[in-house]
Image (cartoon, rainbow, N blue to C red):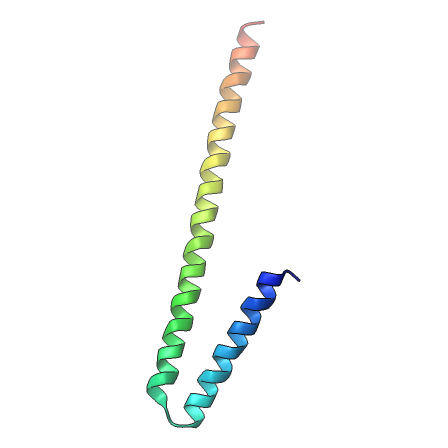
Length: 78
């Protein structure tokens, strides 16, 4: 397992534990604030994954288009 994944899992576990502790101690506002932070983190992570996927898709499309135009030029100039 990568080091970064291990750290993310530790932080996630710590945040979940603190959420349960705050609910147990009847500190609902802190628990809901931590849930909001957790949701925002997951939404940001999803946004970055989608952005990375869109960039790769655009690069693949550009590479495919440029490769096909080079093949056409090679085929017709022989």
